[in-house]
Image 1 (cartoon, chains in turn orange, red):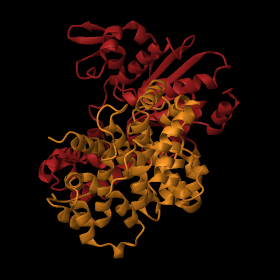
Image 2 (cartoon, each protein chain N blue to C red):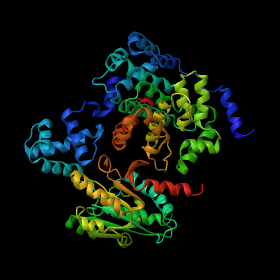
Image 3 (cartoon, rainbow over the protein chains, first blue to last red):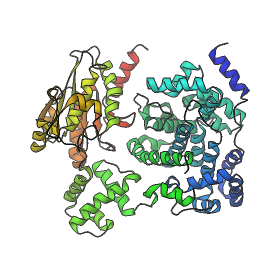
Image 4 (cartoon, one colour):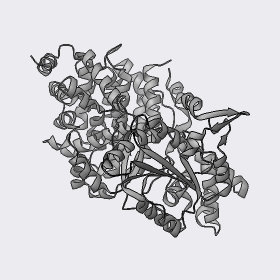
Length: 296
Length: 303
């Protein structure tokens, strides 16, 4: 049996893989509904049921990343001040914390969470700037795009750790290192997890195709948006650790051509300014993740 | 931890920015091409306050008028930019940029020039001030002679308009402040400690050629040829848009086809040049000449 086959077999069994957090799926389903049908009380209850989730949500709600103007003390406060949309984003990020393995699992899970959260924020901001229809969906897609890495952390921690080390030593993207050592990338593994979790079709597409948006058959524009945001994070020190020694021209990225079809204003996009604006996110995400992982 | 404690751990960045400050930020980006993200607003506000004290202006809104409406707006903008860039010069000021030059730009340039003689690299530090930038480059490239620049020679052209800065640069003596970021390895290898100062070694000096050049002097600019990498950090911000365009087009012409232009941190050429192509390197951005040629070369290279 080849490395790839044995890994695929392990992944298909998925016996050590966590299930999707109970609170996340209802939140994802909510995304599909129009805003006016959303029920404030239901969101509050959903979050408050899980005590640790509620505490984490409060931490995040008080972060400048979410644009609050005064300290929020309760979930109700948070939902009222920040709005349902943002609160759902926050709850989704927090519930994702629960699916990361604890302890020595081949990678500091805080780093993965940091990349996912940063990518989610960049995706949302990018979506807003170019007039993408649903910034909330872009946020969730950014948050979940590397769920395949979570699968690798659970199922093949030591092999994954070697792949990550290879990426760090050779300054190459993680998926290239995975392909060389594991013969399978986190995009491929992620697809299996996302399908098993019955994530919406757009999310599955993002998870499976974010390193090759042209291969996406559904929601190609969402995949393209996440692919560009992911590269931007990785080139700005918010990746999984490896410094990728390469040169990226965003206008020559496959994702750019795809997005340009629907969003012609992207032609004159000020990539430099958008990159500088991201500096805010970087420092803040770093602080926030440290706060969540090492609360005093 | 309570929400309040969490909030205090987040620092003061959460305070909503003053709308006048945001307008000043946008003017600076529009006119000077240097961008202050939200987390730098406090710094920008401090710099504005210094100028406001000098002028006796009470609030940011009035100061915004000084920068945009008053007859002295051009002079005031220059004064503010002086505040913004003050004390910026030091050795190893922008490490991600230096690493990107060593690990990405150099290998690309060398691959593009593999077949052309001579194996000699020309780097231009345009607006070198008191010499920290060109000497840092000299040290980094001396290190690269063990790696990417094996069998290559190199020189660094370091130019500035200010004679006093140039004289100080040529002396090569530095205090603790401007050498605070120098890694110990470089300190030991490329500096001599003399009378509480650090002197750059003759090996480092020998690679750097200082010249007085006015970037607005068209004849002089046209004479700078065959450059592989140009660095021009926090200089263009002082030029108006017409002069800036001229300088940039000279930079473009001075570069070899695969050449790179690096600007200061958070500086951008958006709306200034359509010729240069913005590229993202790890931890920094750069401007590349002649995309198509580089691409063709890459394709021609065996995988």
